[in-house]
Length: 399
Image (cartoon, rainbow, N blue to C red):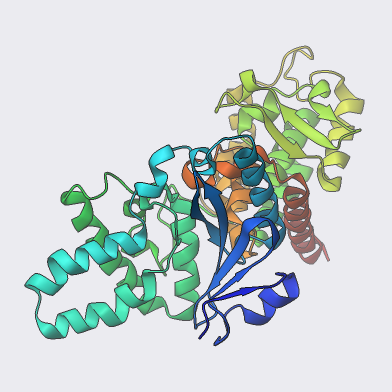
């Protein structure tokens, strides 16, 4: 198998290679330093190659299809621009030393050389080599273990779960023990992998981690429509369902934060939990509800009894509690709308960094290169898809 080939990378090419046995060149480079690495099983990782201080360097960007070709090109354009300005692209990952920080592969190699090969029986060594070491060493290639957010781990193990739920759980148990060993040896300091419990893989979430089905979302929507609550409360909660925003971001929203010309809802830094501006698209289902609020109320879109001040948090909670009691299918809160949106869209194949932006999260670690963009077009597609799914279930119940 030859190692490298220079040719254009296209969506068609990526689709034709992804997930199928592959015997072509293991690396393909495109213009501008964008490259892909391909394993014999058709696992594709994007990378950025650049010269720095006379040396050839490479940075892992993420895996296809969670990262699309268009997104990879955008990131590379930003990194290239930084390099041209004399800024080391690696410093944009939020930590200049990130290249020196161990990756999953580094951790597995360290664990194998210093523990598995030294202390375990031959049969056990063979088992680990054929399972966790073989299956996981290419995971998140080039990204330091400490920088991989739990959502990406969840996504990776959800993929494994689809193939084989039992094996997925074993892989997680083995990987946690390998990486846990590396932490105890101070090889790495911390990792969000440990937030993912083996019992979570292939098992329903526990209480307090409610994820609603589309059918339940449709029932909540209909109950809100029929409720005798104020128009303000009804519109607020329907928009919270569609946007997956934090309660306060919508509750305190004013008309000027919705820019129709740009098609953007901009939450100012002082109202945002992260103290950074949050930008989300105005998509058509949300726009219909927003226009109703604007026509009914004016500047304060979701007022309480006094039309000049927003609904209080207790007023909003009381309304949702009444809805919940009228339905009788268990506990849920407006925060569960956020978790549900994230889970359902992840199942639909929406990329993790797009979901993070929809939730109004700041991206950390190597994903911080995504912070330069708000991925508005991608967010809009995802919001439209989500609204369409909910409305389809509403029609199904109503017919």
